[in-house]
Image (cartoon, rainbow, N blue to C red; front, side, top):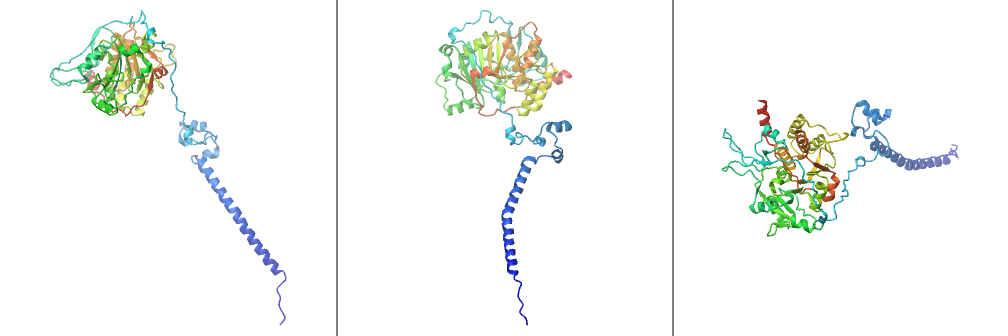
Length: 470
């Protein structure tokens, strides 16, 4: 048989097939990872930048403002990433508004108390006499519960706003002799000491809600240390807590400049409401005092009280001084903030607010040419007052509002002031509402140790309303 030979080109073809297979392998090794990386990059960009975009918005490229106008929506997370600017693509934390910074401002105090001279015309304020209800008798029906603030009807309340000779409810009301105390009981030695004070600086800590913050001694002159009373009111629980922390009173009941006055039988379960007694009723606790300064326990005083009185009262010819709020000026805003932060029972806040609106309270208007006050919301942690009849009346009225409604005193400040002013045309009440930065210049602010607890509002308003309607 003839010999059969393979074509001479066969080996060359086999070699080319082997080379093509190697080339394909190399291509796969190169392009597959690159393709996978491209897919991952595309997926990352898609999910990080457009995950929250509805399809029609991406497709039509509508702007944020147009979308909000069409749908009548406020800005929300649903439309956060519609605008594709660099700032919009940052994490949500970077879009938050920067926190406001509140700093002190310069106060031109006198160089020392040696330069202080009370102005000749100071004290030329509205004059009338005030007396206070000390006891209430049992009504004819036989049912009676003595209350620290007393049983004040709406008619009685309305009459007390008249700046005239009168006897009114102003705390410390007792029942008959065979009834228990209504609260805020003080040791007799403390009472005698406070009766000797002509200028008083006071604060309080109830329920161990704060640390003891001593005034800065280096800022207080020797005259003030000798002639001004510094009294810190506290309950027995707070005294025990502070003593365990090294703040034990000496044999004269002093811790630094503070004279410790222990209060037994607090008149309210709500520690915040109990703190309103020394805050508003300094003229009752210090019956001989001509001037007083109140500071919340979250503040540390680092200015001389006599220089403070000269600056905020004498120089401004005022009988009452309080700082405006650092952020809010309208009571409407304060109501919303109290409810937003659950500072008090919402129904009780609404009841108080509606009552004030029905009696003429209006929104703050900072565009008015001569506004009655520079703000309708006080900060309230620092008060300087001269114990004049009008100042004492305002303090009693403000306390009675807190006693009747909620313990959130910022809600009742402007209503009380405007009603007193409206009721007494021709009898001015000289109030100096100063800037919050001035308060920060004379007292350092700290956080509370704990949050105070609250109790329900008094029920006597509802009783009064029903009786009037009937």
